Amino acid sequence: EVQLVESGGGLVQPGGSLRLSCAASGFVFAGTDMTWVRQAPGKGLEWVSSVSSGGKFTFYADSVKDRFTISRDNAKNTVYLQLNSLKTEDTAMYYCQNGPRDNSHPVRGQGTQVTVSS
Image (cartoon, rainbow, N blue to C red; front, side):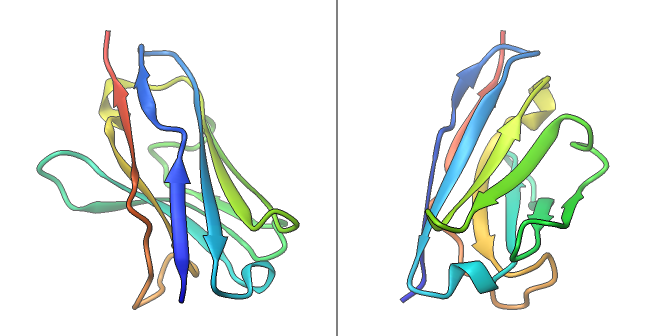
């Protein structure tokens, strides 16, 4: 069974940083692209970033490019999302999911809440 467990969210002031983690199990992590998405209150899911299975290729939404960094440690079955220069509009529940951005049937974790507020 595919399981994804996100952690690392919290309350941070604008301009601050957070590092999100997603621990994966139940599938061949090292052979799977991974993706982060988010959902702001009252809005739909928004793709944030994806990383290739080996970590060589990374992709970002324009809204987070140059502020967020996705990475992974295949030895630890974990994918990370470093959030820098946070803005109030980054407030959302953040989820990791297996597969690339266009995975039609992704599995997501329970999410981790990021709140950016002064």
